Length: 275
Image (cartoon, rainbow, N blue to C red; front, side, top):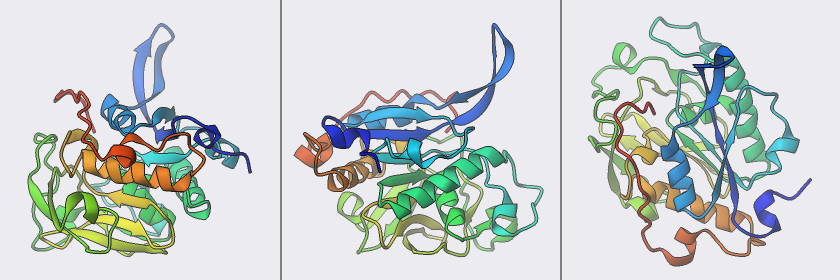
């Protein structure tokens, strides 16, 4: 297997999965592979190089080998057929090509113990790729739930999450955190090797970890939108430590792991930017 790019010296290289968006150009309206800059800012703040990974391509281990770690970004819903369920009317934004690419990426990360952070949809892809299932719509399928889809307050911490004591998030977040919330689905049956390490006050799963990997973690909130707080920067700090632990040949570990000093990236508060 070829060495990951960062293992050859210098900063670790992190692949961030893109989503497809129709945009108009001189060639007419064509699908573009895109990603908002909040993810890139957080990855750069933790001392890594961010590379956008188009998800509308064939998943190939030769491509994945070139990266030290991965971030699965937010987006539309995973196709319920991937976990053996009929599609409910509340499901939206299904992208079969992205589902396939990211699912293969999850299994690669687990098989190769490569650091991976799943954000919102990314957590759900992790669970489904490893054999788990999802609640397709919290509002219509779960009783006694709180509101979990608040797009207007995308940069605000609006509800609490309880963090398990034996968790990679606990050192940076403590026993409880407050997060934003922009999802309408939730983890149902757990995928193989995963365990729940955070829940909301209504019992909805808010974070998962893989038990056999140094850092394969998914969070149901959007830490990239929260800036310099434990629930935001702190999550990427934990990811940075995972990068440092994975590749001892790096010339320097990521800055969070090296100094522990808070990094304050310029995070624009743009309400027009979709997670």
